[in-house]
Image 1 (spheres, rainbow, N blue to C red):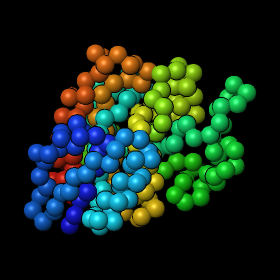
Image 2 (cartoon, rainbow, N blue to C red):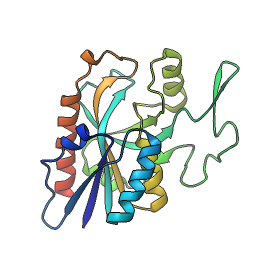
Image 3 (cartoon, rainbow, N blue to C red):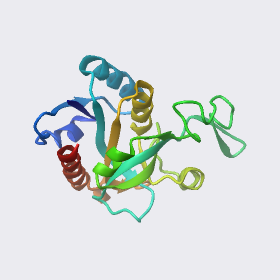
Length: 212
């Protein structure tokens, strides 16, 4: 059995270099780049080359709520592409609002990219969250309020939705594990703790691999 672990950056992939799966499972690791465009291209290329039985996306994320602590690890149940649309008349309109995409047309379900592999999510023993993926890192309180009130978003990344989209389209089981490195809106890196986030997330990945 082959499991492909992907991350946006070398920093994130380095955090799981020490991880070994159980006997009979091979773990392949790939850097797929920052952002949804790079993730789509390099992930699809890696799938074509390796034909994995399962794919894990590993990395950091920002949390919208203080319900989460810096250094927590979570598993993403559903993803939303947050900033694909138009800002018009003081309001953001998504591709679903604009009727450019049907909200229940595969791989979407109620506008979301939902991971249907409940058993895999449970194997992580992590809190399941709703994530939003953006091209522009969120700093505006107005935009933060829009994401949380409209989508009930727990965390934000720049790659998760692309990962869910590709895996759903290719019908490959998948899991997205994220460590909380910061709170959304805080651009002061002195308040971030990337090391703690990656360490906790790596431990969670090892737990997942030991039970997969």
